[in-house]
Length: 263
Ligand code: KIV
Image (tube, rainbow, N blue to C red; front, side, top):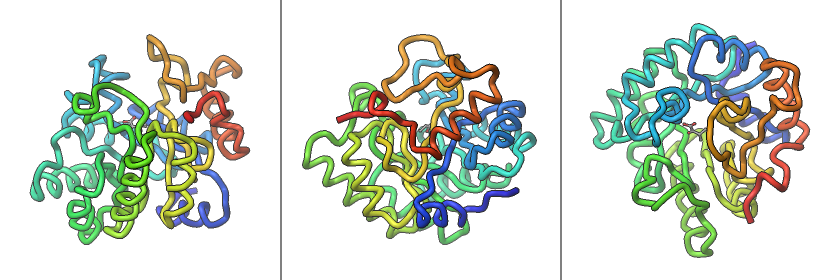
């Protein structure tokens, strides 16, 4: 069955959680979409988990387009979202051209990192038929500005700003908001205040959907894992069942557990 964009709002209104995973290759897309993952993201974390860089900044639009092509071939009906990588949406024309490139390759929505300053780009894309996901909280493309991969929105003023900016982006037409690495309470407030589906990674159990990087779910990425990561392979017999267990844990609201969340 094909998952359309409307499905996510329907799930939100029914209070049913949905499961999302990054995907970079044909086999990953087959495994995840057949295991019931509703949304596949060709994210720019590919810079780290596929290309071996220490950040997502070196990823180009051509890299993302290549992986969208690979994933599209293996996708069995999940909704396919792709990241606009670092500096690929610095102007109106760059935003439109790069989003068009990814949509032509088979993406069904694009994800951009930032806050209220993205309202104009969001409007521009949505008016031209490109669904937008606004990525807020910890935005890895700004790691140099943020001073590291840190929890965002702990300070009450910044938390309020994030809530206000999420509403601005919803008003501009964003179809999803993705929240990364923020306190559980803030994830809950934003998820409840927004009408559009909210996807979380390290944003607590109250967001409408949960996303993980597939390499983290399988314990493939070397080094210390973030607090919000769970290796599902350790309790599963194979990759397919690890992904299926992730989907079931999200639906049953067993993941993320308190140990994966921030105060
Ligand atoms: O690129 C990425 O992996 C992401 C995460 C939020 C899943 O954007």
